[in-house]
Amino acid sequence: MLSLDVLGPGGPYRSRRLETVRDLAGNPVATLSLAPSLYVTRAMKALHRAPVMPLDARIAALAAAGRAFATQSVAGLTAEEYQHTVSAVTGIPITAVRNATDDIARAAERIHHSVQNARPAGAVGSWRDPLTRAGGAVWTRRGDVFAVHAAGNHPAVHQGWLDAAALGYRVAVRPSRREPFTPHRLVTALREAGFGDDRMVLLPTDHHVADDILRNADLGMAYGGDDVMRKYAGDTRILPQGPGRSKILITAETDWEPIVDTVVESISSGGGVGCVNATGVLVEGDPTPVAAALAERLAALPSLPATDERAVLPVQPIDLARRWDEHLRQRAAGTKAWLGGDGIVDDLGDGTAVLRPALHQLDSPFSEQLGMELGFPCAWIAPWDRDAGLQPLRNTLVLTAVTTDADLIDELVAEPTIANVYVGDHPTPWMAPGLPHDGYLADFLMRTKTVLR
Image (cartoon, rainbow, N blue to C red; front, side, top):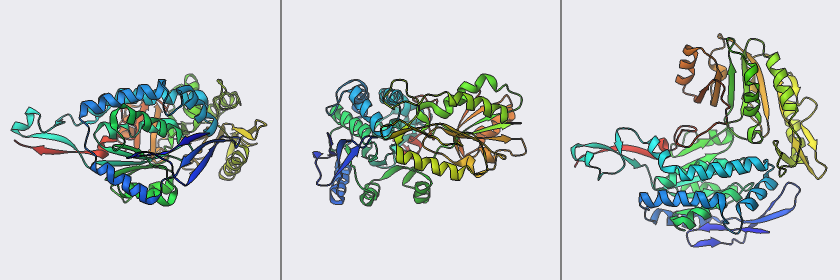
């Protein structure tokens, strides 16, 4: 049994309230301490009092922490033990967990490049820069303490808050109780690399205490579904991170057959659990041939335990898998099922089940199902035409546009609710350090002010 303590400003803290974290088969794996409200309030005050690390020290510590996170023993676990634990508890394929480990390390090691990319070209990083002698723009923080309500659907989400540490914020992370292992390991590595206990804390809590973390921070970020988006929509201090609803558009003048593998990768990569996985495929013309080809490839993906080296699909306890199945059947009523119509649950015989891919064909690009995102490879394919315009493509984290229509690309790039546009044969999960995910986080954390001296 692992012990995942609160990581507070005075060091690790073992709470009286402990929660057992179990693997998919129900076996206990770890005890997670839950911080009480008074402890959270005191920890957040300590972050406000902590001095800012010098920039060079922050960048060096982040790089060192990234290397340790991916390759060394941290908090009593080797990298391989950590990865196996995450896969066994969450059902995410082990190869996807390994890839996420490398992605987090790469993001930490290249953090200086990332934050410099986000800084306005006309701004400098310090009032001491000679350019301010004649008046210059200086990039400064909007606050001192940043809080994160983290998601547990995929380890790679923890790349998302590293920029805040690089920019000098003191950071409080509230981990998901479903998957606390990644943030516990990352925060431990950051503290050991030099951030110190009073600049970087991990505050596991229950739902009653969770808002205390955001309330006592200057700025915060919260992951969740549409309910989280609605809850924080009017709070300028909180940046909500909701469903991605990523999509692929294939226009009539392009040949779809060479990109079938790219579409399959977009739907299923990493177990299909991420906000960048495609959940909508829109085809100008008849989508039936495309649906048939996708169904054939997706059906061939193997059903294996998540910790198997060949696993590519997510695994869940069988009761939860059956609830997902029933939910999908209800929401997919009236659509044409290419995959998933006869169920998505593939029983592994040990109390767990693989969630098989689902693919349903819609009659209209305006069908409500096109906005539905589930925790396994599930896509909706629909016809699209120029009369439908951009409306079915809005509210999209990543849109892969397989088109040669430059005017259409102009419209897609200009559309405010489409966060990223990939033109041509590129999978929606593609990401690179230094490029924005849902905008740069620094757009939210920083501001420019004029300094004249």
